[in-house]
Length: 287
Image (cartoon, rainbow, N blue to C red; front, side, top):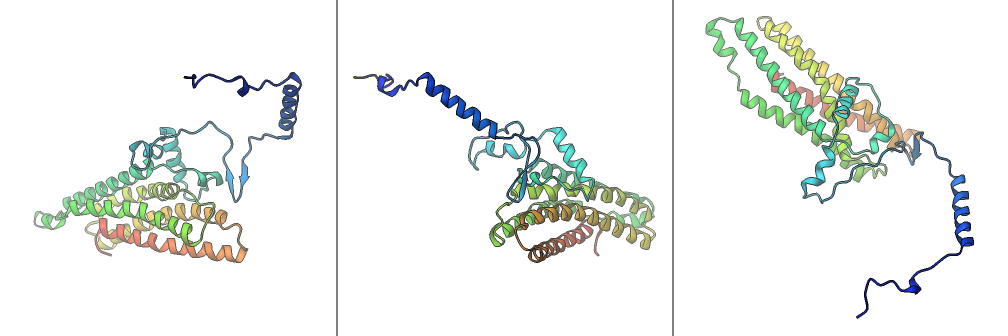
């Protein structure tokens, strides 16, 4: 029996020095025609990221835990960088960032932190409010279903953070037939990191416990906190999505582009206002 790993002399091609020299010369000439640049290049309608170190690859399919590591493999510096950039509601990301896969570490923990802060600040405000009432009124003041508040806040915040970007992605993908479509996780990250803007509103809501005997001032503070969080987080979301819509609709005429962008921004503004009112009801009682 012949050895399957034996190399036949006919399979080996030995090139002469002249052919090798010619090949090397042709390669050298081709390389001279290529101009390398570290600046940001443009691919289609989206800018591409400058050349960097190769990204990690993860084996396994969607039913493997290793497949989802890419969405949580984020360094501490990158996480705090994203949080810091979200503190400016009118900041615009670079165009190539819409092509990158967004992390899910931030959406999970930023939203969880916001839920904890809203729950803690609301509970602490109720405690301060009970201290300013007589003993007969304390039972009525602190009679709050905290379990219902925490469950409703989890459903509300995680539902809004993940559901609205998913619907937006589906509309762009199947209705508008967008070619340069950003990954779904990138849209989720935009919504999730914008939740940081609700933290000042949550902290300010603590002071309403000192105004329990002043119903007008208490109501003004409640609505002030809701409006503050709604405006700041809304600006953070809509400014970034407005930039993204200008990229994906850049091939259309100016009139058609403006029409599609305005329509999408108005449709996204409606659930955001509804989300703000739902936060008001969940943590501060009825409208």
